[in-house]
Length: 90
Image (cartoon, rainbow, N blue to C red):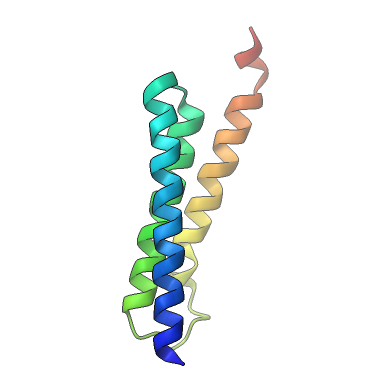
């Protein structure tokens, strides 16, 4: 069962990396920080999922495993807030 978990973590990491590259492509075209922040968030997610798939987890409830997700969701929230901020509409 442990092997299946590693394979699924690798698949999720690959998917997150693909999404990060997708947003990076749009950032290169538009230079909009929204796409750059989303690319960074998904790149961090890909790295954390890869590491979690490679490392033997003794206790998944440890806070250190959730820090990358907190950073990821924080970057996504920041991108959305910046995009919808009143000063962007001027």
